[in-house]
Length: 292
Length: 297
Image (cartoon, rainbow over all chains, first blue to last red; front, side):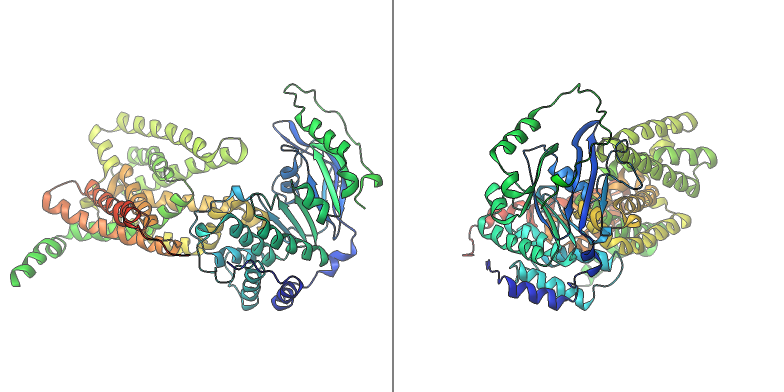
């Protein structure tokens, strides 16, 4: 299979050809894409995310790191508005717990692959075409520009010739390429990736990472939950280190210090079934915690 | 030659040509096959193969109330069945949405209560025979109003399924993605509840022909077999309908010639097709054993 990626050329052709890739200037003006203010999300009163405050600036490329159970997936799901913040903590009005500066349909979310049924009888082409849902919806036709965008996205991820294959016949890496192609078609301003390189070989990771970097160059805001420290150090300018609470947030090199990583591990392992009810009401992390 | 033609006429055509009740039964079964089997394919894809079974039990209290109010009136029992089935589906859906119970658990709990209620209502107010008629139906007793019911349900289902197709496929395949892209009005539960309603009305349409217990057979058996034959969803849907229709026609003929109960015979034929599919379909047993060669890439 051709694991080919032409870098700039292919991607730029894709953006130019689709007619869908014109960057929304309206969103460029605002400097904060996402603002969190005491964001707390609990499962049965136990917080998976505890009083998280800070902001992701527009066009930033941020890795969310932390041990298992640190709340990375929970954070991304809440950014995708799949789960609501706790009611007691979120103060609506001027300071909502979660403020996102783009409408919902400009957000692209990639869940962990394990949450999908790969035996479903759907072709690669149709699966990528699902990225058109926002423009085509449940009933409208898939137009020629959309078809163009779909074809180009399949080309960018290196799956040309696979259009009619059913997804059940794909390898894990190929399937992840399909999901990235769907994200390309979605053409979102805020892109959320939940462990996108889990169980993916280095060749495919390189192709997908190149796409992430292209998004960054185009000014999209990308937030990715990751475990691979080297990958983060090499490619991600900012990092948010979580352990249910904020451990550190800022430049990757500063955040991923041995001290911080050790603290994150220690915090995540602490679990108290009979923990007292939290009474913190308004601690806000200010400028110093923001990513550079 | 003439003997063969005469024999073929006598076995395959004459029963339908000569008897009105056979023609009615055939039309009702074919219409049911056309709409119920594709729904079954979606049920298997959603890993809810047993949901049809649960819902077929859930319609019973409604049917019973219809029976108590106006005797063996098809209209009353059908309306009661639809209301009961949708109520059970809605309660189970709400429990799933707002508690930590998964769909199978909440539905099982709800339908068991409904089933107990239904059996109690019928046995207190009717006889064992009435209960048997409702549970097992009789394809040969389909009257004009029954035919009208089945035909309407079949038409409505096919139109609704076509309209819902894209949303339903996405909601079945990747509900998280749908939730992340869809606006409020097109959230997953709309597709899911709409789909469940189609399942309910098809089960109710099948209850006079096949009985509440077996109407789910024409929905699920062809659907399960169809998955073994094709890799694409469209082909699976067509295959399921075709198998259900074949089973319906052959089942009616067998039941006519050998004097067996029509409903179970139809489902039996469907079972035979399932057995054949298990052995010979590309996804079945024998092709896997026979394939000893492999390609270079």
